[in-house]
Image (cartoon, rainbow, N blue to C red; front, side):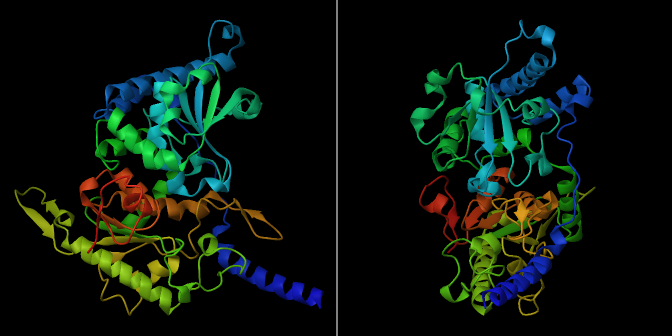
Amino acid sequence: FFCLVFVCFYSQYMYIYRHHYALILEPSSSIVTTTNNKLSPETISKHRKELTTNLPKWLVDYVKWHAQAKETLYQYYNNNDKNDTITPPRLLILSINSTRFGGLADRLRSLPFFVWEAARTQRIFLMEWKIPCPLEEFFVPPIGGIDWTVPAFFVDNDYIQVENTTWYKYDNEELLAENHHEFQDVPIIKVFRSGWVFTKGIPLMAKQALNVTSIFDPIISDMYKLLLTPSPPVQKLMDSTMQSLQLIPKQYNGIHLRARYPGFLPKKAKQKNKILFFRSVDADGFKWNVHAQQKVEKIVDRAKTCLNNNNNSNIVIDNDNENTTTTLLHPPIYFASDTNDAVKYITTSSSSSQKFDNIVGMVTPVEKLHLNRNNKIGLFFRRKTPPSAFYPAIVDVLILSQAKCIAFGNGGYGIFAAMLGGDGDCLMLHSSNRFINEDKIADVKECP
């Protein structure tokens, strides 16, 4: 009997496994982390000047110091003759080595804070990602920006491990840089994201270091441009998606819906998981039914109405070779969600096509994978998930960030897109958001 149960369960599992994941198990090539060392100093300097035009002096100075200090680091560890005369710079490393560090937004929305802390303690800022794959598969350092990649000789020699490292968790204001005296001589400090850094640390950094009152200020966006640019395959997918959907940066609006967020779905929609009954809805999605459909449609309709009624969301285009402008009455709206069925229903379903005729989105063959899952797929015979399986989730946030206005709700994904976009004057909540409503990290009006 038990053998029969096992065979039945295993057969069902393998059927689901093959059909759900077959399309994302394609191999992907490795990403070259940086090409700065192949460029002339003049080229790098030109790009650096463009990236730092609107940034405060302390950050401009840190970008220059970071490049020099990393070069010193290479000299110290690659040239034995200079080991006695060169003091290796100290490091601050943002380490992501398990799934408990959350998804894309959880991992990256606190970067400006850690750069600020690294600058104030004169440490080289690096990022070490192991789960689900190296960050360089999704983003690379821009030319002239901050090269946060971990040098290969550190990885090969296991230098950044326990014997040379102190773990440091920011969870209150007393742990800021001015109180780092006890770690002054520690070669490497490893940090990881925490709730305090985002809800308190980022607003504090914005006020003290950047002299702005909003985490959605354009200067925050400029800080991200110092750190992240899409990897070539991500950029390729983003370009092809925007071209196929006929989207032009700042000439469309955006809606994000976090449908898998705990408490979002009505009880009748919370059926057993699509993949395996013992896994969470947030991990693998849920069965699409009429109850989930009605809830999603209601939220998207509210978000669209909110965008249409916001004067800041009007898109005015300058006509080429003419002294006239054109106002788009019904600009496109890019709809992104952690649930592929929601995007497919809103953008392609005949029952909703007339109501949401100007809404477009990226419909993927399978459910978009979250970065907070392991890089292994399967239960009995596990296979490594290729980085390309996570590209759609990366592209979604990048396309949202280039929207003129964004309506978002639960979670941090929409907030992160807004931080990347740097247009805090045209944000709105289509449903409650804990970070906005409870933690008060920013002032964003809720749709009526």
